[in-house]
Image (cartoon, rainbow, N blue to C red; front, top):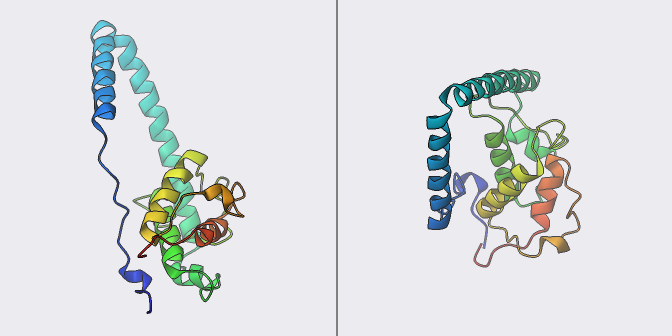
Length: 177
C-alpha cells in the first residue's frame, strides 16, 4: 500500500486545550499583575514601556535579518530542500513536516526558504525549548512516535535542519500511520 503524498498531510499540528489547572494559574497571575499595577502604576507602566520598546527594536532587527536571509535565497523552495535529501530513504512526510514547522516558527511575515545545512541555533535562532515544541508538532504531523527518543542515534546531536529530519526519520511510525 502506498502512502498518501505529503502535500495531503494535515496542515498544522493540533494542540490540546490548556488544562483547568493552567488556566487557574494564568488567572492568579493576571490578578497579581493588576494588583501591582493598581499600587504602582507609574513604575510598572514605565517598566512595561521600556520592555515593550526593547522588544520592538529586537523584533524589528530579527525581521530584517530574516528578510535578508530570504532575499539571499530567492527562488528556493521545499523542492530544493527535499532534493538535498535522499527521499527514497527519508519519509516525505517527515521532510514536509520539518520544513513547514520550522519555517512557520521563524516568521509569519517573511517566508524564509530553509536549507538542510541551516544551524538551528546560530542561523535560525531556535533554542532548546522552541525545538522541543517544534519536534512535538513535527512528529504529530509526520505521524512519528516520540516515545523513547533517548534510544535515537541522533539524540542530543541535532544541530541542523537536516539533523532534525534524520532524527524524526529514525523515530518509529505511529501505529496506523
